Length: 424
Image: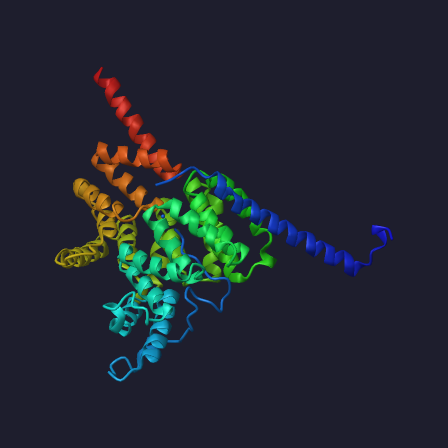
């Protein structure tokens, strides 16, 4: 029978088959880019699970912290009850970036803290403890737990995803690639492609990733809403670094229109608006957020917008408040917020040298593109040659493409060259 005589139902089925096959082909093309990446040593965007019914460690959601923790004070909680409540609290923490939820989950899991890696502890407890340690920036401890889990269960989806997140932050891209490969047979094509895209986009493959993610985005109907939004958020961060202004804005707005509580998107979009000098929009965006999700990083960004918006009284008041916050933080033995402090100091030119020290201290632990951008901003402001050299070496080694960083370094090099010519 001639193909021209196929009935419309068969034709429609063929079209869907070809579309699905094309999607598989495009996704496979992105995945195989793992083999061609240059060797390397990145809140990267956090991963979203494959459906709205899942969270990072398959935790049930709940409406409020009170529901999850109403028996927290009871000393008679069974292990199962503690685990269940901790799962609910971490679900809240991921949904809303609520610090109290993280703290209460940690309290519920406290009986196991000193027994980590004991064989009788459920695997979910290890993963939850790793999530909390990552949140507290105790990356080495989190990795130790995740490594233990993955030795016992090499295909543990939650542990692999969490380890990818941490190693992206640490800039261990070789480790990320290996875990992305491990994820390919156990997760959807979209999640695997997103994993590969994130590491490829910071190791010299930003433009190919941009093109392929745009192609994948045209197959929205074949992704779950969560998968599609995660791909679009990765695309937003890639276009952001490539300096594609209009596309960046459209992708961030698309994500936030569907998921206004996505705090990673809020953080990145706020940076974008500050860079575009749209300070009024920054204030509007941040001032509508609930107080419990206004992290220290967002507070510092709010201060920047105030300082550029002709509101000296409000700026001075918030500046004093943040000075007090950092003063208290300095009295603690560990986990000083160097990233936020460096950004805070950069608002006062005479503190540029101190800002470099804080930005460098942050860089020792966190090596995402935004961390390098902060270091370069501080180094250029203080004319600190060693940190500028460090940044150039990192870019040369990894292939990172970020137009914001490139512009700062090029402007600095031109200025230095002009000064040298003037002296001659």
